[in-house]
Length: 243
Image 1 (spheres, one colour):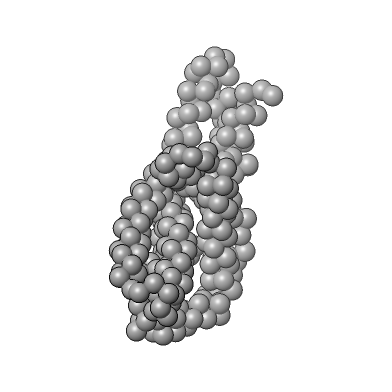
Image 2 (cartoon, rainbow, N blue to C red):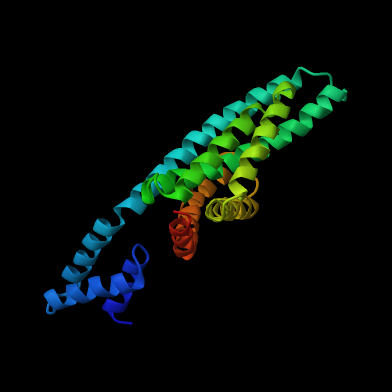
C-alpha cells in the first residue's frame, strides 16, 4: 500500500472520499519529488486544517464527560444519604431504592448524551438539527435524573417528557436526528458496559472507571460522525421538502 492511498484514507475520515482524493492528488502534483518526511508533514498539516473541528469537538466531549461525571456522582451520593435516613424495609425505603436505581441509570444516560452534545455542537455547529436534538435530549435527561426521584415532581416531569417526545416524533427529520443521537448514546453505553466488564477486578474503582471514560468520548464521536454522514443526505432532503 503506497503513501497516497494511506493519506487518502486518513483524509477521508474527516472529509469524504472524493474530496480526500482531490486534496492528496493536488498535493502530489504540487510537490511530486518531495520525500516521505515532507509528504507526511504536509498531510499532517492538512489533517489539522480540515479536522480541527472534530479534534476540538473531542476535547469538548472529554470536558463534558468529566464535568457530568463529578456532577452526577455528587448528586447520587446526596440521594443515597437521603435514602439512608429512611427506615430499612419500609414502603418509603423500597420506593426510594427503585427511584434511586432509575436515577442512577438516567444519570449515566445523561452523561452519554452530554458527551454527544459537546462533540456535535463543536464539530457540526448548533444550527445542525442533530446537534440541537442532542442538546435537547441531554437537557431533558438532566432534569429527569435530577428531580424525578421527588414524588411531587414526577407527574409533571413525565407528562412534559411524553409531550416533548410526541412532538419530536411528528416530524420525520426530527425522528431521524433523535435516532442518530440515541443510537450514538446506545453505542457509548455498550462501550461503557464492555469496558467495565472486562476491566481488571480487585482494583479500586477509579482504575476501572477512568480508562472507560477515556474510551467512551472517542467511541461516541466516531459513531455520531458515521451515523450523521450516513443519514445527512436524507435529513437534508427532508429539510428542503418541508420548506
